[in-house]
Image (spheres, rainbow, N blue to C red):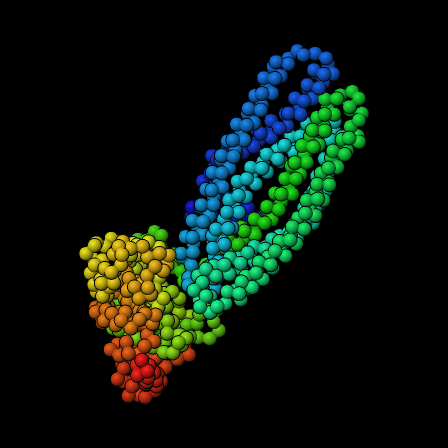
Length: 602
């Protein structure tokens, strides 16, 4: 289902926001609706059968029509069992189906969001939206819906029958319903607020739990198990107190509602004596309905609680689905080039690799100051540009802008003479090979990870990519070669092995623009030498952006940009910058001395 179809915004607990997701399950919902209505009619008819039996067989003293009565009663019991089975089966189909559709749409939408969203929201928070919230919504639209139709139909039907038999007594019994409405109004706002706070706290706990797993190695090496345990316990204790407070309020709500609903039975016992003298069957019917109506009233308590709780889940998932990415393609661009899920590759022009920054200023979405100000730079095709500077200086900003992970605040970035905004993001990303400082592999084999770069690559192309980045020996030493399982995130391999595979994966895309974001910063000396030798070969015939901490790796770059405090302070070739004896000179000299000292000590 298209996401724009899911943007209905209707009132009443946010249910309107998820109504479009029910369109695919019309038949199942119809079965549930019919089953619930017929089931409630059967429930309503049982006291009528009892009334007939008491008035006809007992008070009347006759057994005629007993056989027909028994047959009809058995048919009702069998029909009720069959309806229960059908409704339960279809309810399950709706629950898992809506849950699946919500998760698919949430995951798909996440793929369209910009980097800033993932920088501002933790993995635990996002995981809770996609898994926990969707599950609760699926339950709401299936079982809560099924119960609501059944119980409310029973309430209406029983009320109608009572009004027909004795309107005065029926009105006394039904007087408890306005009390229910008043109680609901009183408790709704308080329960909604508390449940929203509980769900938000649950996201905090999920994030902390995720951090405890992903950071397990760091936790152990820092010996902070006790500290992390105390912190996690504090968060769970906070949620416990909030949950207990909400439970007390719900308990008070339920007790008050139960007391109000029990008044119906008391009224029948008090005022129904007159009926009992003449029509024992009718008195029995009122007793049954008065007791039977307690179940719908109890259901109101549970359903309202579910609706209030799930309203928070709907609001949070709706917020995710309506979060707009910072970087978007215009409708005109999408019409020509397609989007990430329906690309029109036949309209994609070949990308050469000329890059131009035209008076670009930029600040991050959550930043106050410009990282770049009126920056201009021409990078002809085939040029290697190195970006250097101290840690945290903002070296990745230019690469992020070239890759269109962020948009310039002002100015333009042109690729092959055309503004990036006039081309699709996917077209741009498909022409870029990006190797990160922290290599990431997907769960699966080495081969599967390489094929993410080019799903149609042949065995020959894979081997050529591995050879080009000097990784063929590394992969050959693995237990099963290309078919070796890398584990979650590639954790079954060393950092150097992962980096070489990531490098080969980037090369396998045959990128016109290659971005190396401190690709050798986290590897050993031998792997660094392999990667550096590979870089010299790979960048030929490509435009390359090399973000580097170790300055010795960029001496041969065509242009070196020196970044300090987020600003480009120097630019030029290595020899030119060294002769100027500026910031680059001091940075290079200090790093060279540090490396020489380390080498001597070793």
